[in-house]
Length: 107
Length: 107
DNA sequence: AATGCTACCTTGTTAAACAAGATAGCTAAC
DNA sequence: GTTAGCTATCTTGTTTAACAAGGTAGCATT
Image (cartoon, rainbow over all chains, first blue to last red):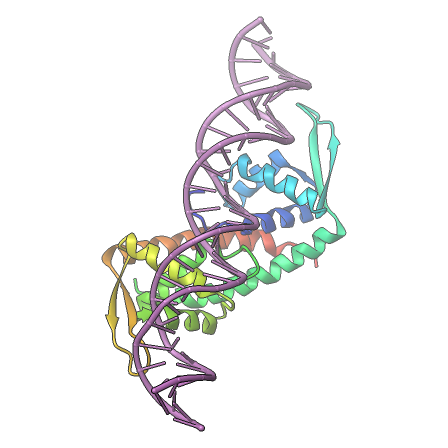
């Protein structure tokens, strides 16, 4: 994305998507796009996945693909679930004030 | 703020507040707090104001205070108004997808 | 054996936020 | 007249996130 707005938000979104279903990096990039977060490159995604894994918020497992190279499926750990809920409340505590501030702008 | 979530968002919020009324840095920090963005320090605010001024999105004017040192009141330029509207649509294009992603998390 | 898609990962850069602290004007109280 | 405390601005140095660009390689189809 061109804008700097996503900073810090992407990580939480990735946790949330993984929470819904075990998923691998490449698929994740497609899913983010489907949700409307266009232009999030793999150069953003893979470093986040590695970081989350290092922090033990997610864990990966290699599985063969029916067509193509092996995939590394990630799922949340218990710590990951906790982190996801923390992200959710942090997001709320940003989103509400920002909405309040923005609403009153002139056109 | 502890979290990294605000990155890029603060600038837009500051533009929006200045749009509502000419305001100086110190007051801005109080206003942000009133809107619910706690713990946004002056170490964040003043660099943003200087940057926005450099980019000619806002312009400042010193005015005496009824009590205390002079204040530097900022108001939006025409470019600032344009930038504010751009920020608004960028925020939308983040906020909608993030809401969609987050809604479906497990509890 | 060449092409194209799937899939993973790394390196180096840019930029935003922040903690910490420096500087100084003004007022009130003593 | 000097000290204390609030108001107000700004700087420096650090951390961290996202990203552009590119590298590697498996597999299927032709």
